[in-house]
Each structure stands twice: as structure tokens, then as C-alpha cells.
Length: 462
Image 1 (cartoon, helix red, strand yellow):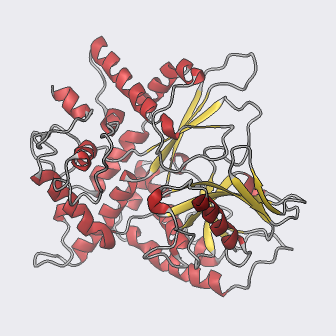
Image 2 (cartoon, rainbow, N blue to C red):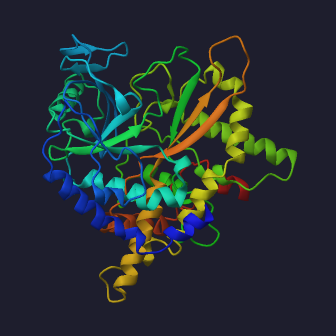
Image 3 (cartoon, one colour):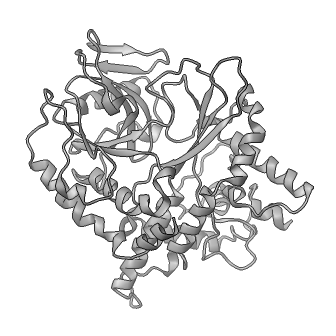
């Protein structure tokens, strides 16, 4: 891993993917529409120059059944499987999700284990968007973090040319009509100009029911900032994540630059991610406190939990905390041990610190102190740090195989939602947020009126 990290530390690599992605996009676009009578994957030589994630490009079958899985602000996720005979029109799944098919059998291939992730229409989305995301994933993130920690993904072409795009939009329209979408996402649709999208490993078993539906649970969490902001003042009592949470809950005016509108409902105290990288305990009391904090962190994300019987997980947690399933309670000691022992979060913290050593306020692209190439490199590296602060990790807990045989829980985690952040579009917002946190005293916990958080730093400092 160290050798891989040293290779990626070369600043030229963090921007090199642009040329490969653009060239590959042009080459793929120039190819004729995929033949649905022939199924070999299309792999262009320019894409072969990237670290492989075979097959790099899969062709979309001409006849599929689609169901909605979840969405975020920028992307929507669907389960797409080859249609069975008679699957014409719309049907309702057991979970109430609308499914649409075009009615002919086909080979499932990677669609049986992957979900379709496609950008929504919006600023900056063009036909090369997913090619660029995948090139960044392959040339920067895989060597930097390690493939074993990443949700697998590859490209699929034919979303528009196969007619699947129109089916996906109709699914979103059905959700709109049934008032099953977040208000600010109502009316948004899949990008009409994206024919090459992503197939991402299905971490939630959304497309395949288990024979033993209660044995596997996947919890989705946002790791956020796993090291303190370099801009935080000395003596800060809150981490960056909890400081922003406090600012978002503050009365209007105090958080005018956080980019988040304050809601009228009560402030929901968010879990502090710093507990994931807490120092090892030195006494039985500290050990009990850390174990309790880690378990509380898991429980606060149960609103995003998806069991292996679910067909409609959400891509971003929005439900209130749910009762802890009995199977999960039994696995509590193993889950806590895994969270304390894994190297994943410390690895992420090290990358965040390495790629953002001076903070967002130190990046100056256009001011009198801007240093041209050096500022561009600093922004490139900041974008990677920000990508790892806004990604999702999927904690998968398997508590048995449904038989009478007692088996120890199996626990694993992978990172997903790793789209590269566009620093040139977002830098001003990032900097405005940081200035608000500093000016409002949110790092020090001296804002008025004071907001309640459960920051691990604050708890440790008393």
C-alpha cells in the first residue's frame, strides 16, 4: 500500500485522467450503437491504459426491467435486470417500488450483481461525465486507497440508445406523482445526454433477495472529516463535522454561508465521525466509553440500514433512527471490535491530512498571491481530500446463513460515491463555510445561542 500511495502522490497523476477520459469518450461516442445480438464488452485502447476494472465497458441489453433504488443530489441509482418474458409495462414490487420492463429474456451478466448509477441533469453534466469519474476512480483512487476498500464499478454504454433513459425518467415521474421523493428533488430527471453510465457493485443486495432475508444488513454512513480542519483555531473543542452541524442548526444569519437552510424542526444531533479514529483506550473506563460511542455511531445510522430482503434502499440516510434488530444486537461485540481494529478510517484520515495540509482558505486561484501551477496542484489535491470527506462507506454485517449452526458475524466495509469534487465550482462555497465556522465560534463552541453536539473531541476535553 505504501508503494502505491507514493506512486499516486505524483501530482501529475491527479490530473492525468482528464486526457484519457476525454479521448476515450470521443472514441466510444464514435462507435456504432451496441448490437444486442452480440454481447462481447467494448474495450477501447485508451481505456486499457488505465488500471483495469474488467470489463471496462458493458453494453446495455435492449430489453430490461428497471426499478428505482435511491438517489442523491447529483445521481440516481436503479436496479436494471434483463427482462423476463411477459414483463411488459409496469408492475409493483413487493416493496411497492415501480418496475418497468420491455418484455424479452436476456443474459443478466454483471447486471445481476451491479446497480446502474447515472447522473441527474444539472450544471457540468455532459456525455463524458461518467468516463471522467471512472478514470479518476481507476487512476487515482484505486492505487491510493486500495481496490479491496472500494465498491467495484465499471462502465456501461447504451443508456440512451437502448431506450433505458426514458424508462428511468418515467420511474422518477411515478415517484413524483406518488409523493415519494424529497421535495427539493421533485422534478429532477436523469441526464439526457449521458449514454455511458456506471455499473456499481450492489452492496445492499437490492437486486437479489437472499434465501435468508434477515442475515445480512448493510448500513450506509458518511465518514466526513476524519481529521480536524487545518483552519480550526487552537483549542478547538469541536471537529469540522460537528462545527458545521452546529452552524447548520444555528438561527438564521449565523449560518448564512454554510449552504444549508435551517429547518423549523428540532436540530437532529449527528454522530461524530472522530470516534472512528479515536486513540486506543488506556483504562477500562475509557474502553467502555469508546465502545459505547462506537455502538451509538452505528445505531444513529440505522435509518439507512438495508437488509438482504430489501429492494429499495436509500442512497442517503433520511429516516429516523430505527429499532436495533435482534440479530444486530447479538453482533454488537463483533461490530465494535471490527470498528476499533480496521485500518480503513485511519487510512482515510491520513489521505485527508496529506492532500489538504493547509486548509481550504489557503487555496487562492485568482488573487494577487495566487501561484499559478502551485495553486492548481493544491486545488487538485484538495478535491481528492474533499472526495473522501463526502463519500459513503457501506458497512455490511452478515450474522449467519439462516441455519441452526452458530457462526461468528462477518463484517466488511467498502467506500462508494467517489465522484471527484469540482473544486473550481465549489471552492468559494467551501471557503465561505470555513469563514462562517471561524467567525461564529462554532469550532470553539462559543456561538450564541449555543448548539448541542456530541463531538468526540469535546467529550474528551471535558
